[in-house]
Image (cartoon, rainbow over all chains, first blue to last red; front, side):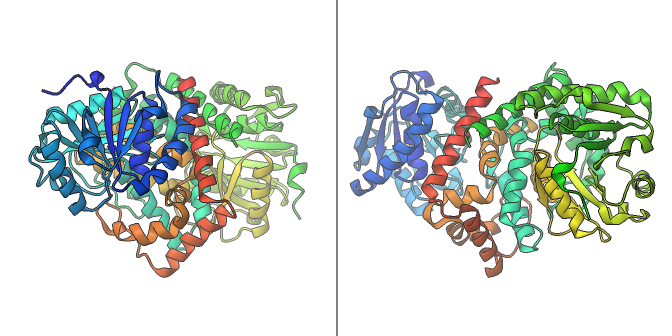
Length: 313
Length: 313
């Protein structure tokens, strides 16, 4: 039903804010024709500021063959914006009434085999697609700020979404140079924002209690967990740090520490099932790599990050 | 009372595990003479494995002038280990009875103007120094794993610690190429581990609820928040992302979202005092830099990280 993701040549990017503008820059850099829809032509300069800012970084990362800012069309005519688009990225304001009205329109004027993805960070597609006549192809494709730089896109459909549209969005984003992550369940905050929010709330608690300043928080992250997290995430960071025993050693040895008052976040019960999921998950990621090789690989990449940060200081 | 931190030439590193070995490698790389104390000479090879592994990364980061593995002495004689040492980094096993016994001995045999720092992640210096005859110069200097790579050292004294020893440790670590962070209060988990633990517990909740796999968690972090966090931390990430309004806009606009069920961690009350601390803290870090310049700087460094990770893949 849906076209081959690699056959798409034109993308419509709806929205003139940092997210919409960031997506526009990203798709241009990957060599697509892009039509940007803005609510009012007065927003044109603001949009171009964002696109031009993003372009500096995208150029430094390497543009796709044929990528050009000349392949951008800007319009305030929604029908013209979606014409010939093989994919639509919607980054309208975060108000449910605005999103629902827009999806009602898009549902009528966009062919049913064109996937429409919303950048929303705070709503569910079940709510957004409520009054859309063709909701099967609507999904959430939630980027991470700045969207022209960070590869993550979290994908999930609503109750009326066709699973094939979710799969298509995954394949299309991957083809378009993103790192898609299909969510298992429609949960508020998706995966990355929930993790970030947990950390953020703990940071606010510490500042509220006079235990740390914002500068302390940032210095602790920058010089501690963050460079390693950029290389390994957190599960594999613990898995590799525990040597041959891996995540099993981590949970069996440090499991009791979960009940210690480190952070104000209550820990889940460390059931056998949770333990197995964590251990099996890490073992699957590791595959047949020896933990020593993974540690050496981690170190090499952290060195690359630290040297890159020093050289770009 | 304490010597000039820049006058120190010999460091004693106590412990043969990954933390003790990591410290040994770090101090050697910064050009110090290092005496490593190990409990049993049979641990010598294990220690050297850690030191040699760390040395690869430390060489890639750049060794200090005169730095050499030849400047390492290994001994199982504690009196010989601390002889002539101008600073002692203790990374003994994480058992209070072992630490207390060790500090009792060190308190007798080490001159009182030599600062002794513990790598402990789970104990307070108030407990560790309880039976030490000269506790004034004992502090916690908690590194982040791997300690030869990540710059963070969290510093805090116990009830009997002289504040001047805390200040000295801060100055010495900074001189020795680390990024010291003096804690405001003696709280379990310090700053970085508390933040990491909040994130980790949320990750465990998600895996327990079937909302994400360990692979999803790591992919979300690696492709989303982590590269930005390595560049900006989290406070300044929000500050800069909110444009001219900065952290004030973030808290005033997204404050209500703190009460949303993003993560299982209960948010603190967003009082005027907390708001002011966050806003003032970010403004102080920003100084007179314009938010656009900070965003460009952020992007340049994230590009450097992404390119470094790609090139080292």
